[in-house]
Image (cartoon, rainbow, N blue to C red; front, side, top):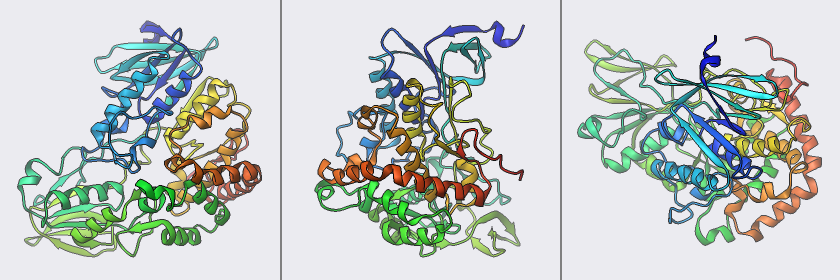
Length: 494
């Protein structure tokens, strides 16, 4: 007898694996079709709701104003100004609140601390096998399964370095505002140039005025300027660019081959950056004030990649990818703020919907939108509307694209969003878009949103054809999975 045959069986109307922002948006969508007579089983390997927010560093904050980080249209109860960037604790509390609100509409049984292991389809049902840390097994049997793996983010380990004279730490295991690092006055070297590095540098500079903080920034990263795209207060009425307008501008510029030209325009028009050399853009958002604080507080910025830290002839040195070295003070702290989304994240390709239509997979190898929260929301609706098998959504190997062309990556995602949202709009009730609280356009007052709505209604089908050609060009250029299910060439090995 197999383990799954001997395990306890729980039946429900829907099983969702993953209790992060993607899973909760899928749960919200499902709750619009199910009732209190139905049951959803929510499974997550972590001890509580929150997904990556459970694991990441304690001083993390949202990139965007908090009202637009939610499940469906569930409102926050925080009582802060709308522009407030929610902290880790505030985000976790809100995601718990989202489940409580949804549980008033449909039964939600929570299985936290259970690792998903496998699934099989038998007799019109999906059987998901899960294991607890103590070895107990359950099989969840349901007509539908949503695997909300999202970006497969895992905590960053400290860098494995050769030197014995420095402290190698990671924000996920060392709160840089407390403990030994707080008591020490030795310099800090932040490794990385993305949002984690900016958060870490900002926290150090504001917590320890005068502390020597340095940055090893690689090729440099630029960010979307929050003041330009998400202005606060009354300025929302008269300044800022509504995100759908920005999307339309990008749509007209990117043809699938000219990412360098588009990046130069975007960086100059909507970007903010710490260093003049800034080639990376991974959808992060930063304000001018944050950027200025970090820039003023940094002691040194090294535009190179760290390979190792070594002890040599009585000195301690950074070894850089270019072959250069840089002496640093013994006792320094080296903080690993490199990327969280890695090729070895552990998830292999599977289509965003199974051939039977019973299993939805939200993962980084078959992305249909730019962010997991949006995928959870819209794929959840399409699943219950029985539309997933008839809409030729394009799926993109999100991770493969980023690895093959980091520069093209964000602009391809803009094209993907424009194409697929156009298709989705033609196949779902209007309330699906009305209830989408993730929509960044809703940061702006209605009069400022109306031109974008009118433009979308008048042009989205014509623009969809253009985006289809752009995405097909991307597939041929980079030899990645990019196209409707069943119509793609399998990318070549290597």
